[in-house]
Amino acid sequence: MKREELDYVLVPLGLALMVGYHAWLLVRIRRRPETTVIGVNAINRRIWVRHIMEEPSGKHAVLAVQTIRNNIMASTLLASTAITLSSLIAVLMSGGSGGGLLPDAPLVVGATGEAALSAKFFAILVCFLVAFLLNVQSIRYYSHTSTLVNVPLHAHRRRRPGFAVDYVTGTLNRGSYFWSLGVRAFYFSCPVFLWLFGPIPMFAACAAMVCVLYFLDICDDWEDGDGDGDDEHP
Image (cartoon, rainbow, N blue to C red; front, top):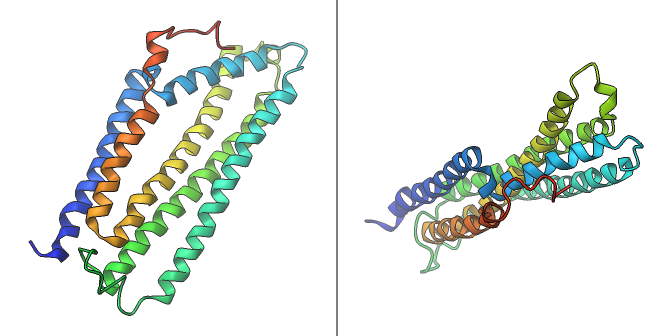
């Protein structure tokens, strides 16, 4: 197999590895949410929303706003970083590289021509643009939640209080899900960036990242302890 043909084998394998892992994670979140960090956080966010909305005096309103404001600031930081990096990549693409990336480097295998370099830069640009859009959506849902969570639950007596909690929880969870996806877009940009140095570093980074993400995403302690735990986690 020629060195230039490695891109057609290792890059799709690396992408399939990442996509396959996240497909498995999605199924696990839907079927056994208490065994994943995302699922456990969603459970606790529902408990937190009910606790805030059931407080008749409204003394937790400031706490709720400050908590959501911190989330908005985190999403804003990531969105700003993503659009800044996107602009930088766009400048590099417009400037071009006449000889490609390190054309004479013996350790760089795979395609290193002008067209290949443009494709690699474009893939990195897509990662950062997707991260920007996802974090913007996260800010949108967090902004909605900052208002909805301060509506007292007794104000929904004629409109099903349980439905109100579900709606606010869903809005907050969607903001968190978009934030998580935005962070993963940043994660995904790392192996794509290493693709600049060849398909072998890119594939190795995909395999290493899947292993790291598994330990970051799986939470067996919650299931082994108290999977319900509503009274112990206000």
